[in-house]
Image (cartoon, rainbow, N blue to C red; front, side, top):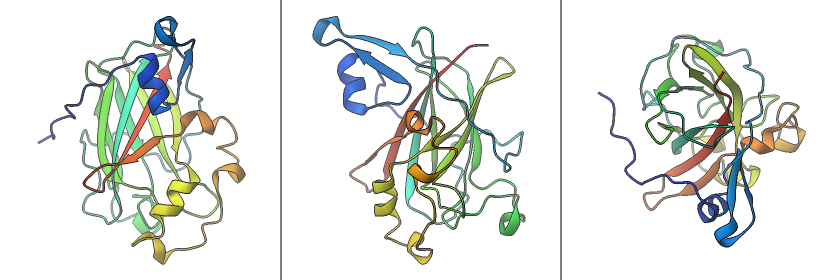
Length: 220
């Protein structure tokens, strides 16, 4: 059974966007004259670890350890800034030890840290996962595809501020794998527009990291 979505109302406006620093949204002007215009979220490589046809579910952890992370992914029409309902948001990422399901030491399972959610009337898809681990040659990231009307309208990657990752990785289970070798500035894929796909993350009162990203896509 799917969990209930977040009840906090998501809204767009000059003050809200400025406060959250949301990727894919630009703010012009100030006060009553403020207007919001979306920008197209940059396309980035799918990478070698995609598995099509994943489960429609919110909790993708399958009991694997890691810092609890809630991802709030909003999908917007890049031309109008209006939320897109019933878009399928497909994410996959490495677990805390830097392993992808279906590959290498994760080959015994093809499902952990993978899942699909459909956006609601606010354009929101919500996932319960863990903060991603790192693996050699890449900065920390989450892969994402957005499907709309049977077509893929966006393929990209989501990123995290290095200072936040440093803080998360000081604790178990991440601290058993020190010395990650690539940060955002030295990641070849991040340098190609990754700063526009940074997830805004806050830690809630329960100690859970809550990340928010707005993705502006073309409908076709």
